[in-house]
Image 1 (cartoon, one colour):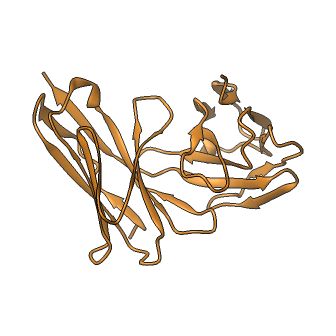
Image 2: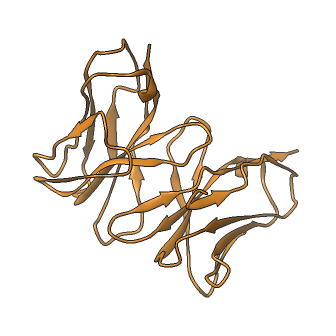
Length: 109
Length: 112
């Protein structure tokens, strides 16, 4: 079993819809969590950190559930430009970042 | 405003050849790392460095060497290329206490 798991998708979603995807992690000692966005054949870029109380950045909301060991990303009012692969990242300390394989999102007009 | 610069962007190697992927950052970041990304898998850490003169192995170090003689540069050397090293390689850097990782644009390597 992978330490960080994501549904690879693709999630095909109409423009304007709300979409959510989860990421599960197996190491309960994991310290911090992030969502990165990666466009096709590009480098990953930080989308947002994930805080225990949940946090929002515009149309994006991230949640952390330590008891069930998962984080989630919710995108509201999706735009065509949101089409990308979303990578879940877990920091288990000592410079060890564990990356999920990503969830591919396709927004359709 | 260069950020993280890695070269070359594309490279084809023959099995057994050696080469060096170059990486440079101009943000005075202490921490630098190399990842490889393969289809269906997350980024995997090859080697990392927390400062000049200090390097350590990541998850998949075999077949690769690194050095960190300056804060700015962190080259990755493939000693004897194998087809299993066909991948996309990303160099990354950040401040040791920072959360945001800055990536280079990637190097597409094919070993035939």
